[in-house]
Image (cartoon, rainbow, N blue to C red; front, top):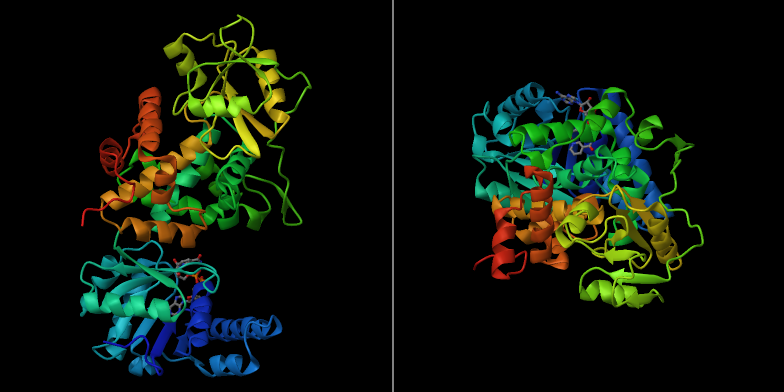
Length: 501
Ligand SMILES: NC(=O)c1ccc[n+]([C@@H]2O[C@H](COP(=O)([O-])OP(=O)(O)OC[C@H]3O[C@@H](n4cnc5c(N)ncnc54)[C@H](O)[C@@H]3O)[C@@H](O)[C@H]2O)c1
């Protein structure tokens, strides 16, 4: 087995596209001896120049010395004959995403390399087992899934094929670390960790849009301001492109036999089919002019007629503390005309009114689950009195931005956060990785401010479970069914990441 820390480690990379180029860069920067092969000689030469130019810029930015960059460049050799891979200790394949083409490459490599050489695929969607199936020595084959752009994204998923030898996995973990990435190990499962875990954020955003609860700009603003996401789901979809995220969504949904938790909406397919791919086509969920999104306002208009009195619906400590800071009179008894304020979890105003008997025309709900210091989400039942609702918007708008949405169990943030947490719990339940590795993968692979299990812990397992359980019951949709991992931890009062030792 190769030693990933060996100074003269000999690596072969096949495929000089976006990913191959990125892998070359991190490998030669780490002093690994790299041979690069692409069936298109011009592509390989162009990639070498692009990698060298990126390394030169590191000198200009003071991130590397000229000597270091020269040493890195000396580690790369572009070859035009795969037979020169005979002395490689490990080969990473980053060619076109096509099973038959990858299979024939792996078969060809087996004829060239030594018996000990490890063969790794950077595939994002093909089962490692399906590639290895046609090979003689399946135990030396595994996945090494980098993220784009490789030099920026610190994560690498090490994928254990059905036959991968544990020593192969260990060596690839070591190689990932040597290349400056954080390796997480995952079995050969559809979407691995990140492409599965990432479905909750985008598909729940799309579900909110599909139901006309809120606009993309509103959803994105709530997730940025309320929980510190760098981008909301629609901004993220536009950045990755519908040509990438729609096929991945469909693949993962199909591979899990149409689990409703992974379901997308018709709009997603329409954008994909219409070529409204996002930033790259200047049109996706947003329109782009000169690369800048034309984002409609996510903020409710104020009219200057703030409510002066409020009745709090339920003796909820969080709601009381929040309302106390609004500088408004809090009624002890219903005066029959003032707004009634509620802060439900997993319920819409309609359900709160039905359950409590509160007058739906005066009932206004706020989402206190996310951080509400800069923005708060407000909703009312379909028959809420517009002037009453506006008076609450005006009151809240004195101290923060207000996002006014249609009645929805779970508002925006509760829905998205609970769905991310639930999918993370399910990934832990089906043994894809440890809670810590799931969190690491989602933070490094998708730039989430917290991992799914951390989000669950932050909200509280019981709160997360309650939101989902109510949403499932109110919508009748098994999309919201809580993971058994979550149910057990909520019922037993255990932390979200609890694992028996
Ligand atoms: N682009 C991403 O965001 C991303 C992220 C993670 C993983 N991946 C995976 O990485 C792999 C490569 O993706 P990419 O975006 O770099 O593709 P790309 O289209 O940019 O590059 C592919 C390169 O492979 C070469 N090639 C194709 N068939 C070949 C063969 N039989 N032998 C040698 N060279 C061959 C092509 O000439 C091309 O230069 C795919 O499996 C993809 O799923 C891509």
